Structure formats: structure tokens, C-alpha cells
Image (spheres, rainbow, N blue to C red):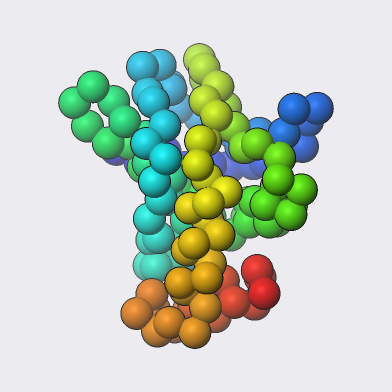
Length: 118
């Protein structure tokens, strides 16, 4: 199952990424992937019997970049719960470093990440 983040907003306690899905019973996995075709970062949540992929498109990269710069926590806000995206700073930092100059992620993804986060 995929959940798509639509907006991001800075609040008192960190950055809040909004989706239109139920988050009940989901737990942070502290791991991320890249969807090169969609040019997006993907945070993994765990359900009791499956993984749920939180797709973070370029539209919210500015918020991610600012949260990384200021070391503020990031949260996912759904229709019924809010989940802290634990370990996201380390995961995104690792992916950015790994993607820059690496054509294995696809030319579009590599160029977009390098241009945006460099």
C-alpha cells in the first residue's frame, strides 16, 4: 500500500507532512527507499502484516531540506493519527549522499536530488 504526502507545514514542534490516509496501527520502520520513476523519497511504515510506503514527492523536498538543516523532527499526519518519522534524518542524508553522481538511481532522480540538495 502507498500513502502520498500532499503538503508540509512547519509548526512549533517540527515539520508536519500531511496525507489523506488512516495511520492507525502503523509504526515507523526507520528505513527509506527511492522511487526513481516517481522522483520521490519513500519512508516505510510497518503494519502487523505488511509494509506501507509513504511517498514524498519533490513538492515536499523543501520542507525535508529545511528539517534536515535545522535538525527538527518530521511527522506524518493522517486522518486519524500522527506518527513521528523516526530515523528519517539519517536515511535521507544517506540517500542524498548515495544518489549524487550515481546513475544507478536514474538520470532524472540523480539530477533532481543533486540540484535540490547540493
